[in-house]
Length: 155
Image (cartoon, rainbow, N blue to C red; front, side, top):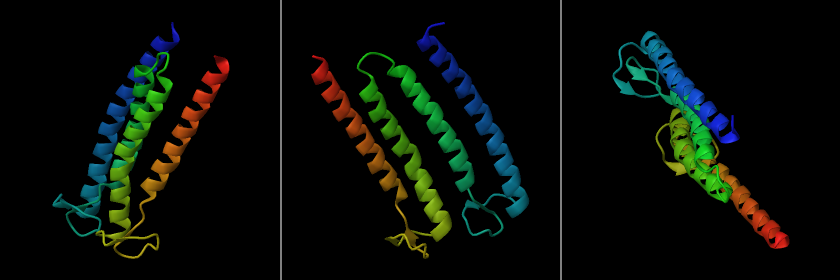
């Protein structure tokens, strides 16, 4: 079996596992929230009757989905010259998945947004996703510079 075919097969297996896992995690989350807070009335983090907190569910499903999505990008960009495009697309997908997770975590921990801060006071939100995004982007830029320098030396 060729390496590309192996990656495609592994992607399909992981996609099916992600779908089945998402269904299982959703059922477990719903049963837990029903037992803890009663019938669903609204998404909230206060713990009042009817408040269902989606944060843990979103983190589990989102991060697992991010891994499977990056695997899909790896299969899609599996060709000469596709390495840089893969990293840029993975960064974009990562930011698309991590930003809502950051928002949910900050909302759960600190309530409604009032200001950017790292002091964990009510209303203070820490934009950690921006630090992750910048560091990840710097890594991609360093990779691009390295590949460019290597290509110049090789020609």
